[in-house]
Length: 313
Image (cartoon, helix red, strand yellow):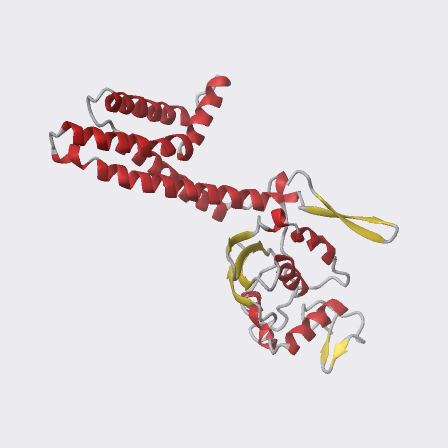
C-alpha cells in the first residue's frame, strides 16, 4: 500500500483515516488539516501530490522571526493593517502545490492573499497584522512547504530593492533634467533663464552621479588599485568627464552642460543591469556558500533547545 498523501510505501498500515492509509503521522496530520478546512481538492489533480512530512518538525527554528530586524528581511511591504512577505519554498513541484499554497486563506482567515511564482519557487503572502511573520512561516511548514531561511536569499532581496530604488531616483532626475534642458533645445537666448535651469540640473545630477551611479565609480577605483582594467572603467571615465565638464559650464555660465546625457546614461545602464539580474536569476541553477548559511541554529543542551542567531547574516 502507498501513502494517500505523499505516495511512499507504507510500512505500517495502522496509521489511517477511514480508507486512507499514511506512511507516517506527519502525512496523516496534513491530511487531517486539509480535510478539516475542506481543502481535499488538493488531491484531485494528482493521486498523491503531497510532500512527505517529517514526524518531528523543528518549529523552534522560526523563533528567530520574532526579532524585528530578522523578520523585516522577508517583508516587502508593511502598513498599519497589512503585511506582505516573500518566502522561498523549494518543495513546490506541481499544480497541486500551487493550488494549496494559493488557498492559505482557507487555513488562516488572517491571510488575505497568496501568490506562487513556480519558476522561482517563491510565495508572496499578504496577511493582516493580527498574524505574525513567524506564524505564517510555521503554517507553510506544517503543510510540507518549509520556507528557506538563508543569508543568500536576503542578500539578493536587499540588492534587488536597492537597484530598484536607484533606477527610480535616476529615472526621476533624468526626466526632470530633460525638462529643464528645453531652453537649450529650443534655442532660447535668455542667459539668466538658461543659467537658472543649469543649476537646477546640476543639483538633480548629484544623487544620480553619487548614489545611483556610485557602483560604477567604486568598481573602476578598485580596478585601478589592482592594476586591472574592467568594463566599468570607461563607464566611470565617461561619467566623470560629463559631470566635470557640465559643472564647469554651469559655474562659469558658459553653457547648461550635459547633465541630461549623464543622467540618461546612468538610468539606462541601471535598467540594463536590472534586466541582466532578472535573466541570471531565471537561469541560475547553482548555489554559492551563502546558500548554506542559516539565519539561526538550534543548540540542544540538557534536553532543551536554544535558538542561536547567526552573526554573519
